[in-house]
Image (tube, rainbow, N blue to C red; front, side, top):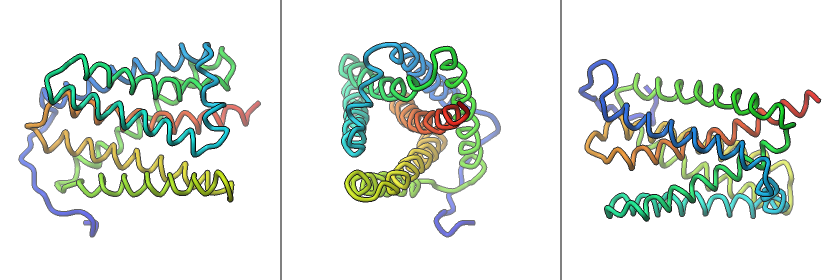
Length: 232
């Protein structure tokens, strides 16, 4: 057992509960909307937003980071307060943030290959999610520390990109890796939340899983795009 894992027995049977199925289904539905928005936005002027924001990489990271964090906070407060209008507004912010960012990446591929790129990205993301989920469900331990490590990775990535923007370009790659790692760790944390916190609201857990998966998706999308462009 890893020194970071604390024994934490869970009383579980086989298979998924109806609550877990609802969370998975909800997060999958939200991701489907996000992917559709990426494809649609890639053919609009929104696709060039990244060009302006990432002229200075730290600006793009801060803007999208603030949009994701802000959208999550608004959506969660709306759900906790029973105000579905506020919750919906928060989800719109999240969908737009991931959708516009992904569209900027996707627009670098010829239109006839964009669906293929999205398909490959979706398959890779699904496989990664399955591996992380399988690991979490196979271990009778708490993964609360993954949430802390995810925050450390995000902060480290932010710092690396800040320095890389003005000093060392190589640190931009380090920042990418750290933020990607942060979303993978958060995915494991959110899956653990679904596994062990059965009294939590389905909507809140759905948002958590969705954000983690969407974060992994846009990073995988960047890697797939690098591969595709390198073949031309």
